[in-house]
Length: 476
Image 1 (cartoon, one colour):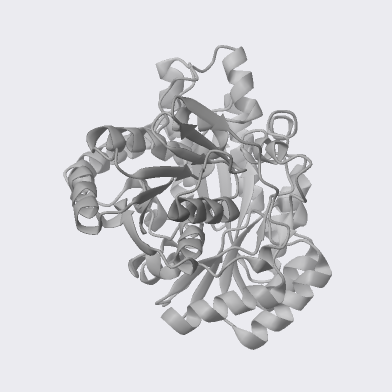
Image 2 (image 1 turned 180 degrees about the vertical axis):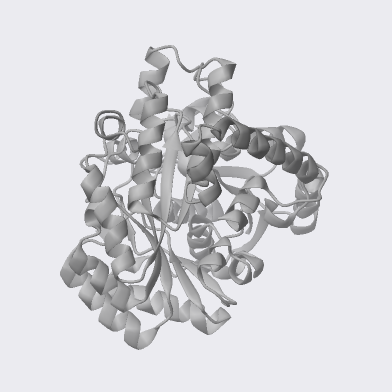
């Protein structure tokens, strides 16, 4: 069969989506022909026409769509604009998992949760012409009914998964990956997963909801063996070359013994620098020392809010100010550069809360900062809370990004103020910013930033500039 994967990358961040690589590997193992419709390099005005052209040239029997929540509105528009009734439409990904009742309106099959085993069984049955309505791990349309099947068990042995089929993506995702900015002079950066299942339960992320779906169906936190990891990276290197590695795991620093084993094998077999994400409480001296020895160059750490009360009681992140500061200091001690994730616009947040984030950044001293504006995601506890308090309409369309404006029911004056604070946090380490804050002239600087970003948005709309997000990355 011909299978066309759809990557609705509305943010246009240059990086492969590993989920598609894994599902393409499953299809490839079964002998199917695979191709990809990828928004990343297609001009915005040509998204729909390019999709039609791909359907006509490749003529797929199956459309496999991997969709995140911020991409859903585009997917709806795309599938309403282009007639695809004679193809089997299979939807998966984060949004399909948290909102299958929404996705099934335009899909024939919705894969809920991990997709490799479910997709493999689905393709086998379709190829044989067998019934597909009773496959575990998915919702299926059959006649006038929707069959809501039980969850499939979690994949316990992640080492048995196929190696990603990286060739499904254009080489630009490896030669011009956004992660290249962390590796000076790098030509090729590969993206890999080390594990599955974040062990934490932040109230603003969907992780805890998905874990609940899998209750009683296997161990949530699973890690690949160092041997499998190195084998996977080596295979990629043999195909593309390799100057840097980007781990996409929510946490990497788990048991010290496993880290030591990974370090020894990775250094001897691969030996290229890498960047990763981590929680502050996992950044202990010994673990950071080991990961530096393995080749760590940059770590991105979630601060979210500098208000400890908001962090603990609203976000369910129960680490102290001291732990946050220590995480960044420990990374600096071992020569690992740092990037901080922060967020503003929470319900109950005050100006003082945001300034606490500013002050915490000044103490922690990350090298760069990324500040987003809170949006309540489907399946999260914070969505339930803001809806209950009538701060959010759950029918509000999902934005393409989390940088432009707050979507809570705040006064317009507060929304504008949040944008000003977003600029403050993003440029916290600027001496000019410190001067304006101390001199109580920050509003003047904020207006300059706001005007600059408005001009950039207009130029971007006309095609003269890359995305605002890309501009921000260059500035930082």
